[in-house]
Amino acid sequence: MGVTQMYTKCLAQGAYLIESQGEAAIIDPLRETQPYLDLIQQKNLKLKYIFETHFHADFVSGHLTLSQKAKAPIVYGPQANPAFDVIIAKDGDIFQIGDLSIKVLHTPGHTLESSTYLLLDENHKEKAIFTGDTLFLGDVGRPDLAQKAANTTQEDLAAMLFDSLREKIMPLPNDLMVYPGHGAGSACGKNMMDETQDTLGNQKKVNYALNVTLTKDEFVKELTQGLLPPPAYFPLNVALNKNGYQDVDLVLQNAQKPLEADEFYAQSKMENAVVLDVRTKDEFVQSHIPNAVFIGLDGTFAPWVGSLLVDTNTPILLVVNEPQLEETVLRLARVGFDNVLGYLKGGMNAWTAHSMELQKIPSVEPNELSEGLNMIDVRGIGEYKLGHVKGATNIALAELPNKFSHMDRSKQIYLHCATGYRSVIAASLLQRNGFKKVINVLGGYEGIFENAPHLLSKAN
Image 1: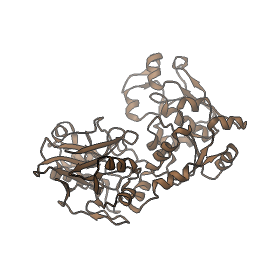
Image 2: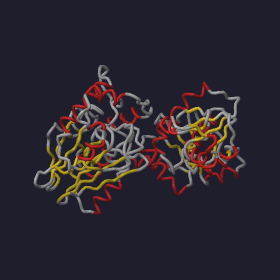
Image 3: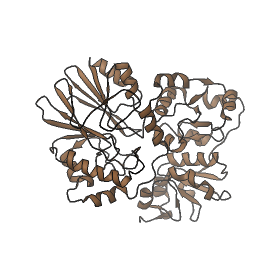
C-alpha cells in the first residue's frame, strides 16, 4: 500500500509517508524535516500534502518547515484555526495521492480539531486509518490536553470521543490497519500497547475503548479517572504548532556555539539558566558541574526535558560529548526548547583543566542497604504498586519538584527508580535545590530485587 512508518522511540511517536504513482503525503512529521526530504528525493517522489491529525502537545511538528521546503500545502481537519495558511478540510473530504485516496474523518474528543485519515486503494477499498491521538493501540487519547472553550470540560471531550469512535471508526472493516500517532511511553494516553500497528479487528477485541457493551457514561468515567496532570510544557508546544516557530536549521546554527570553561561558567550564572548534562548517568554520578541538571540522551530524553524544565524559553547550557551535540539540539527542538546558548568546549576535561569546582552523587550498592532508611522511589505509581521497598515513599519523578518544600533537608535521602536513569535525574534536581545528603541506589529496583529482596514489600 506504499505506507512507511517512521517511528521515533524517544517520543514514542509515529509519522507516516504514503506514496503512489510518484506522489506522496506525510502525516504528522517531526520538526527535523531533512529525513523526510531525503526519503522523498531517494524515492523520486513529489510531496503533494502534509496532513496534521491535530495540534500536537508533546512535540513540535515539522509541518511549517516541510511545507516551505517542499512547496506542499498543510491540511488540518475541521475546527482547526492556525495562524498560517492551511487547507481546512471538511468531514468526508477526499485528497488524491496517485492512485490512492485519503478521506478526512473528523473525530473530535482528544482535541476539537482531531481528525483521522482513512486510506483507500485504487478500487476505493478501505485499507488503513491514521488515527493520530484519537485511537491508540490498547487506549485512546486523553481528553484534557485540548485548547478549548472555557465552557468545554474534559468530560465533554470524552463524550465527543465516544461518539467519534462509535460513529466514525468502529463501523470500518476489521482488516483495516491502524497506524496511531503514539505508542507505549507517550504521555498522551494512559496505557498503550508496545506494538506500533495493528488491525482494527484486533483492537475491537483488546481495546477497552472499543468495547461495544461500554456505555457513554462508563467510557467517560474510565477515560477521565486517574489522569495525572499533563506535563507543563504541553500548552507551549500546542502554541508553537498553532502559531508558528523558528526553522530548526537556524536553531541548530545558533545552538552549536563552543564556550570556553570560564565563559560557560559566567553564562551559567544568568538568571534562570540551566546547565543541562546529557552524558550517561555513570559519567554524571562520578563528576559534574555543581547544580547541573542531568537528563541523559540514552533515556527518554525529550519528554523529561519538557516535563522538568517546563518553560521552553529556558536558557540552556549543554554539557555534552561533542559527537552528540547536533542530536542533542535536535531532540531539544522537538519539544520546543530552542534557547540553547552553547556548549562546554572540550567537555568536562576542559572544566577540570581550569580547576573548576566539581560535584558528584554518592552511590550505594543494593546489598549495602538496610531497613528503615529514608528511601524515595521516583518510579510511577503503577510501578510502585507492583512492588516496592518496605517503608519507601513514592514520589514520581515528574512530581518531585512540587514536593521539595515538604521534604526534610536534614535527613539522608536514598533515591531509586527501576534501573537508575530517573533516580540520577532526581538526585541532580535535589542537589540543584540545595539538598546536600542525596544518595543514589545503584541498579535501582531491579538491583534491589536481585541482591536485597528481603527489603521488598509485596505488590499491593
